[in-house]
Image (tube, rainbow, N blue to C red; front, side, top):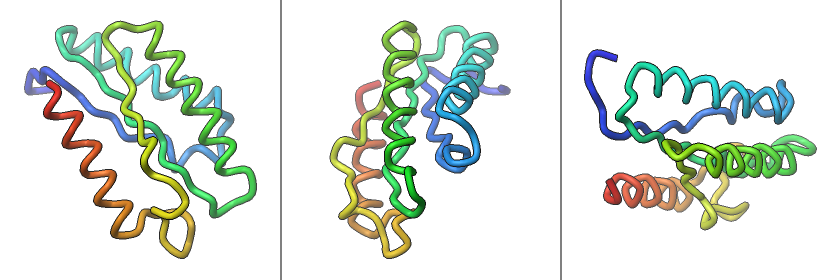
Length: 119
């Protein structure tokens, strides 16, 4: 990175969650965190939980599994924290059950802004 950030927020993994196993998605995110830490050792990393989706069978369960694994990863790494999206549920999804609707987008933005304001 050309800049020296104090804080990096990652919101990744949703597009990979159905094609890859929960372990593979989690490992990929952990690898990226390791690379950021190696390049920017003073930066704190926040992993944004994967947001619920219900467009495919088992999608919701897989996301819960990934989020639980990410939580465990963050608990073991003092430089990485988890941003919970506990307030985003099925009612925040649009008709496709994949993307956020307007209300869901506002909740997501609020969560990100609150995270930024803590640092």
